[in-house]
Image 1 (cartoon, rainbow, N blue to C red):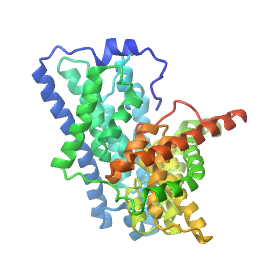
Image 2: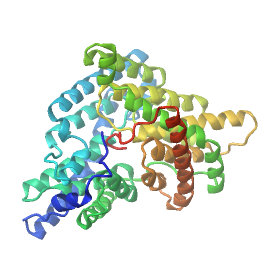
Image 3: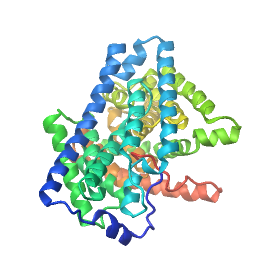
Image 4: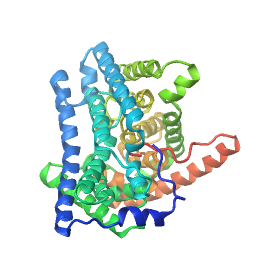
Length: 442
């Protein structure tokens, strides 16, 4: 998914999109806004609950990592492989029919006056495909479906009631992100990095109120809560351990981005000279094998990371760092629609855990590896998703501790400097990470 071009004329965006007032009365806009925010936050909750409920029906647990462990390996393999292939076929169908009308970027394109907007029908099909992989223990995130649905609901509601729907879509996206991650401030930076709303007062207002409203609905009506447990030691110690794992974390985050960008069904089918469905089938088998071999790589990564806060053995680090990297890359490469934010923080923190455990075996004291994992999750968001401002606030909000913001900001700032330095080194060698290529939730 291509991020909006920063060089695009923002004046046109303001004139034709976010700031173009609707012809409906203000009271109707207020009611629409409340409905969109509630639906966006409610969908985030419903998506998680229903996919986990379905998993519990056939695996006796809502935790995909435990389900992958309990089921016979061939059942896990077959379930994941089948889920990825089905989702990939649905994703390919949607891309062929509505390719210009899917993803958060379609909202930005509508605001820029490009004559295309996000499609609720296409979003619904992609969301259904993501639900299949979520219920099928696939090593992929569910965030893109949740966020994209929030935007689609807002856009359609705005258009149906005598408006363009661009600003209302912004509210839906902010509400969905805030509800999915328990992160209202990070939601605002996410919206800005994708939609460039700072130049529009109306869009900023809708984004701010949408993030606040989505968070309030999630916490107040749907039992939303902090996602990760807090750090266990001092912030100074967390910074120290994060600095030790900084360079490996940056390299891994960059490598994961490269793999996601380069390993796609269309690219491989052109190089190999075979039908895309054949490539999708092969990558589906790889995705199934990754979860069968590394059960802790199942799901979007949240459950495995919570396990790491209690006990962080080498096997968990390998599953997060290696198993999830392979499983997520293969799933996305096959064409299954899904998010990459939680897989990215899982892969990055998994490798950082391996680095720290290796140092511990050589005598370096690692009292609380979870603390360093939290910090390196932020590195994953900043480098692997090219979203440093989101990273600064997202992880503190996910652990429910805003006092971590300054420490995370220092770590993220250093990681970005290292990343930019590596860009220059790699560019000098004639190769560079593709700029402007992002996933729906990146």
